Length: 230
Image: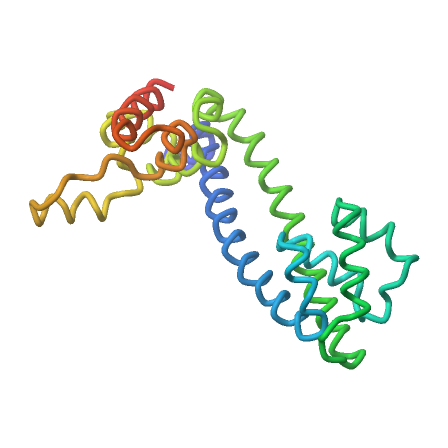
């Protein structure tokens, strides 16, 4: 009964939702990338020129769903294309390219399959945006100091690597600094060749990416120190 009540009313477990969210976000990024490339490859058999004009993966999937068959590319579709792409000139380019496209013709059934898959990719991207908002709100509630210092995603990754917010708070700054680079650390310690890593997941911070190469290690140590305090 005591253990059950401890598990039930543990306020420190709010970070579990953050850990699950960041793991799901990383998985979604991988899946979205794979699915988007599949949509590009699939639809490019019919309209290869679109891939060069529209470089963003999600926008490409939206365009593929909107256009469907190249025969639908008429002047009436231009306002809708502009809204999806967000660029009048690019929308005109798509319209021109559709008229002189070198792609193969495909049946209605095949096109329906492509459109359905493109719709799934778009809905997955929309869900990812919602999940990002959810993560932002949870981080502001659970670890507002850490979120304001290194951002929601990086803060969540640190919590996930540590196992919990309590564990992260108990870690010394030197451990926080190399969270995510454990393999490289143990390899360096084992072989005794080369230096130990200067940063793990903290490398993705804008503070470190903007720093000069010789200062990256120093900034990383300083930032890890501030994260521990936060």
